[in-house]
Length: 260
Image (cartoon, rainbow, N blue to C red; front, side, top):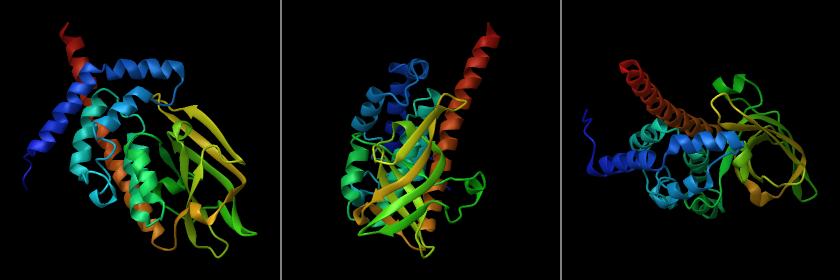
């Protein structure tokens, strides 16, 4: 196998390294955590301007069509300064689900994601078991007088308190799975945000007969879980890349400390 980086990959890696160094990303993260904020809006805008939010999106869907190697190289460098923001939850996971959905409104939403205008988060887990094995969600999507009603709850939505909309898995009345887009300000949606152990943010959601029209159904049927598993696998690889960068920085800090 050829493990040499291309010129484009080297440029992207070096650019991310400069960003982390010059932008004082780690210190900005500490300040943001102290303020209790879900993400750094200025940092997110920089991600969009540099094209990093478009990297995971296929070219035919308006992105740069980066490979998982490209994404991992970028995130290792961002992980060195903990400058991840919601890039995995929104640009890697959420954008992939939209790109694979065939949804009529996906182009409009993907454009908002790659320009940094808005962010989405996946709301799928309801029990700890679902983290290891996807199953039909207990959240229900029921037809009601020309529209639908969404009822149920979701746990541990990564970057949920800074998302503008949620991609929610639910079960139809006939038992088939569906993926629906729910705006964060939807009537009947309750968001309970909280910090995680590393200072990142998450949220739990409750849906009390939230009204859903047919245009908000992003995908459904048996192929949904294939796309979901693929998107989650990509997010896992991206998260591991962030962890590698963070671990390497910890080793460097410890080594410098021991020397003095």
